[in-house]
Amino acid sequence: MACDEYSFHVPSLEELVGVLQKGLKDNFADVHVAVVDCPDLTKEPFTFPVKGICGKTRIAEIGGVPYLMPLVNKKKVYDLNKTAKEIKLPGAFILGAGAGPFQTLGFNSEVIEVKAKRRTGILNFVSCMRQTLEKHYGDKPVGMGGTFVIQKGKVKTHIMPAEFSSCPLNSDEEVNKWLHFYEMKAPLVCLPVFVSKDPGFDLRLEHTHCFSHHGEGGHYHYDTTPESVEYLGYFLPAEFLYRIDQPKETHSFGRD
Image (cartoon, rainbow, N blue to C red; front, side, top):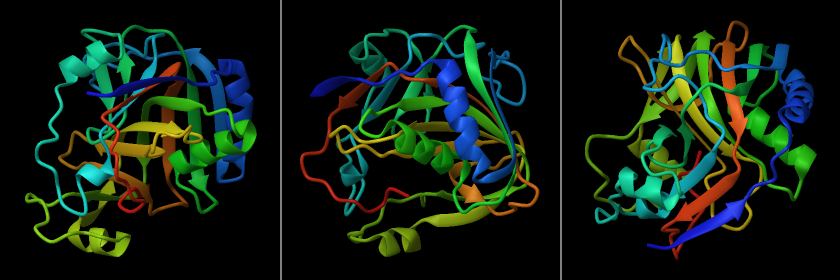
């Protein structure tokens, strides 16, 4: 299986704090970004199997939307234990949107803490951070991953139907008719991965799934209660991108 390795531009945590603070202020009324010791992520609300985000950060994008639509390719099944070996971290803990990229976790270290309240702009939390990085770093792709909690408010999400579509899906409109959309309530634990600019690997530039301890979860789109929403997140830049089994034929729909 083809696997390409790419080295991201990796700014210091202190530099990223200033960049994200400035960008998020254009989209949220209250913003605080700082370098902190990672909290114990085995505790609620996260309940991860490891305590923190480690220093050997990678993002892997496996396959892609073209293997799901227009029609699903059911032969594309991946073993994450093998994936961990391909990204040179055998036995790694893996965190992220299960249909796409992810980041490895391990022990406590310093991370970037992001607090944002009361959305005033049109961008969702992840898009605002990603576009901020793209604007600042331009042709130097920066990848980030981690976790955040929607502490207050509600969000728009989707889940896929129990069965794959038997009819070809050839546009965002057709995809949206097939998906099931819901409004879900906080608290929601989210697992985002985002890349400021595609360095030529047909990436899904941002992808976030969420779960909760009250039975709700899915693919995060945006908050629906901008006046009351509160986000708390912990992030690290990724050192490397691993592009595994990139589709040879591609398209641009189904990536929202």
